[in-house]
Image 1: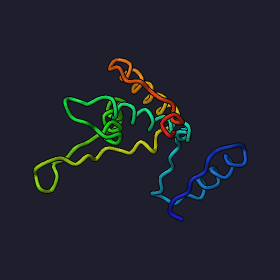
Image 2: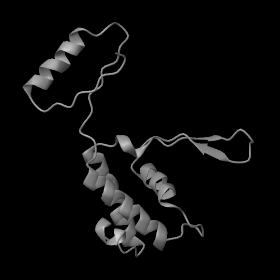
Image 3: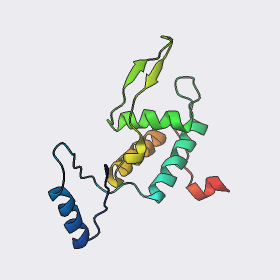
Image 4: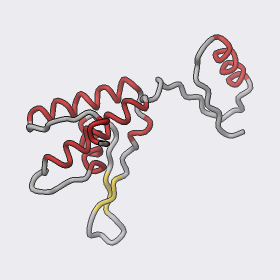
Length: 132
């Protein structure tokens, strides 16, 4: 197996991770991460992005929720890199996805969005309100 993932829920999971580490081959990588964002955080995140996108043009341009996601990820100081496209008439975003954010990072990101929205008069709705 080339990739293993385990969520630590107790001593048995710690023991299993330790066994995997003991059996790791030279050159393998071991990575420890905080818990990923919750489904509730994800729902709220996209609701907030939609509220900003529908209520606020940015420098005269109507941005999509996906566009705003990149703007706010940049504010979170996540890696956002741009390179010229193949035609030389624009740029390609090489930034990272928000799907790997931890619970704490997602909370920080939603706080950035909330503070930004408050400064720009955005009225935020709960995710359930937008689905109706």
